[in-house]
Length: 182
Image (cartoon, rainbow, N blue to C red; front, side, top):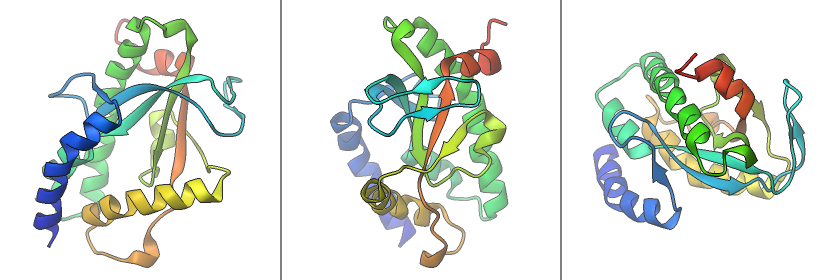
């Protein structure tokens, strides 16, 4: 069943890519696809003092789920899967920092934002997790992300599906932590 769903997602992914206006940073080595967006949630103050307000420009990061699921399909242990995801995200972060640094609107971008159910260990990567305030938004994100979460799970357990959380990182923290030119 999982292989059929993964095949379906492989077919649908190019359409998803087009509809979401995502960009590849590096098609081969980076696990993220990105786009510039305006933040639409409630104001958030990050630990370094950066204030993220409604309509601030952020770089939205999307895990390239199909690529990730294809790479993880032979890995049976959930702990090993988590480590692989962590390593791939960690490896990709300097590319995110470079992308923002070189972007034509770099001075307007406040930081990085993502939303995910895979937020365990995000703090070790430098992200701050924030629960979205809108219960409707959490529900919609939960519905759209649950199939991918279940596809990646070692054992399917619908009662153990985590809630989606925002991941935030200020541009300054991103540059301090992941700047390749330090």
